[in-house]
Amino acid sequence: MSERSFSEWLRSRCEPDWTAVVTHPFAMAITTGTVAGDDMRRYLEQDFQFVDSFTALLGAAVASADTFEARVPYGKFLGQTATTEEKTYFHRALAELGGRTDAPPEPVTAAFKELMDEVRTSQDYLLIAAVLCVAEWCYLGWASRAGESPPESFVHREWIELHEGAQFRAWVAFLCGELDRLGADLGEERRQEVLGVFRRAVELERAFFDMAQGGRAG
Image (cartoon, rainbow, N blue to C red; front, top):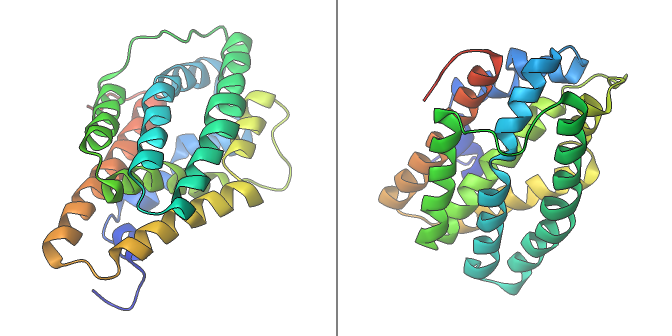
């Protein structure tokens, strides 16, 4: 591996999918508030299906992290964001859009939940951190491209705010830092194992946005 950090190495090995995610037309339409109401409703209905698996994955990170210092940020994010701000946003936004919290999952949604559940049950901290890092880092990637004038609708504006700003940037930096710390001295076989999980998560993020835009990806 080169002198690049492990997280940056993982990200670079996932091109062109990574760039396709953070510049996806659907994500860019969120930043400008131009996503049609029905499309945003469907997208959020599907994204809400991740809340339970994502919360459980954060809990697994708390349990499997190798240091107390690592457990604390996961616990803080779990308590302050995943179970309060984000869940509250979903209920308000879906009520505004006429959506539902029990929508049947699309194939790509089910596949992503399966990946989250797989790494959670493995109790392999490095793989758990890899999936969490993809989920948060790529969302920061597109949300950080929003212009200075936020969309008027809270549905778009608050979704951007949940994935941007100093607090969220620090959270993503922590996740990348954990990958860098744990990945610095890995052997080639283990690096490839982590890359496989990281890449699969990136591919699913791209497929999820493709689904939201109207296609079907499974």
